[in-house]
Amino acid sequence: MPKTYDQFAPQYDAVMRPLERWFLTRLRTQTFNLLPRNARVLELGAGTGRNFVFYPAETNGVASEPSREMLKIAKDRKRPAAVTLVQSQAEELPFKSAVFDAAFATLVFCSVSSPAKTFAELRRVVRSGGTIVLLEHVRPGGLLGPIFDLINLATVPLFEDHFNRRTAADARAAGLKVVGVEKRLLGAINLIACRV
Ligand SMILES: C[S@@+](CC[C@H](N)C(=O)[O-])C[C@H]1O[C@@H](n2cnc3c(N)ncnc32)[C@H](O)[C@@H]1O
Image: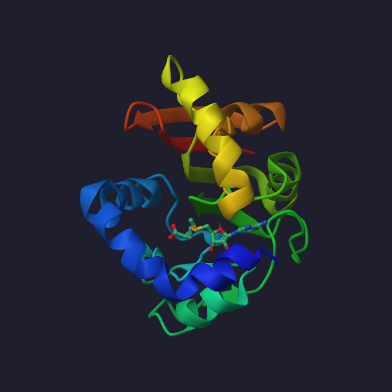
């Protein structure tokens, strides 16, 4: 289990607040616009439940999160009645195959220990033809790329946060069809839409 987020949980919402105002709330809205309605949905790494307010009221599915302390906060946030909270890691999901129509994650692939294992699990639990949407910070192209490689040397040991992940390429390598990549903040934030 990621100890970092157990320790960070009490401060998480306050730290995110300025980012929400700057760009995140807008991008969370866009993330949900890419998800199908009336679908059974899985959220990975739901954290303190900051996305719950964006769930359409009729949503049913699971919000999963490995950190007990993040989950404690998420539990008290309002969410649709048919969305259950489950403690689990993205690399080893406790669900049967093809039980979801769609899955999504926001700011999670920087933290998973293995993007390849996580994508393999997503391909297993989301039905063929289903949708996967990811809002992630990634390694940008151009001159910023090597700078992010340097930052990564510090963020991994300090926060278990991989600053130079190539998440769209990892999705393709895992066999997903990447149908759209919208780049924001000089390419450091990607909104990635995939089909299984
Ligand atoms: C930056 S927070 C994002 C939380 C939330 N998705 C949001 O947008 O506010 C990263 C989240 O990923 C979770 N996480 C870390 N490792 C994970 C893993 N292996 N599988 C699933 N989630 C993980 C952390 O516990 C944390 O809640």
